[in-house]
Image (cartoon, rainbow, N blue to C red; front, side, top):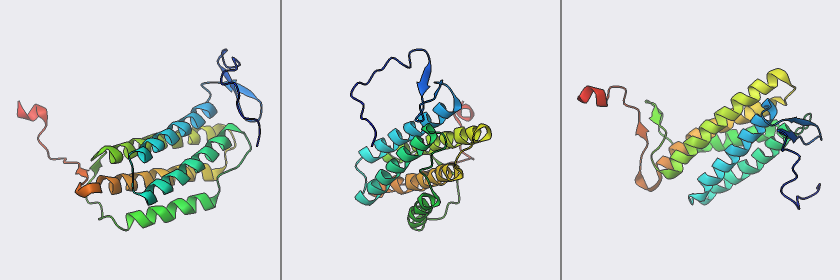
Length: 188
């Protein structure tokens, strides 16, 4: 393992650049930094979901995903480095299939919400989709390990399913989108 940070501020980023893991410097708003910064945001959001005191199995699955996301972020921070593989994607698919098999089929769109853990999970899903879009944009400009995009795509699917699972906690339910609802403007 490399050095640990003993001093948090270095002043090297005061000019608007930051160091990548390979020692090169880039602008702080570069697409690469945006991508791994958004993965960090996603990881933090998943930490919030876990903090709601989930079922131990789901909490442990999300904790494993947090470790994967740290690896994925490091991969994006170090050009040419690979840390996410097909096995990571297969693990997500296994969890996804396991949780989805217990849910009723979707016949309507659902609104992101239901309870705090579910709503937080849906926020994580949308951050994941944003991270995926940024990585796709980055892959147009630089060589990116293909499993990274696949992992984020599958993770957003899993977070959707987990949002559905969490919405059912304590006898609660999902909120279905009602396309035929009477809007506030209709009530006037």
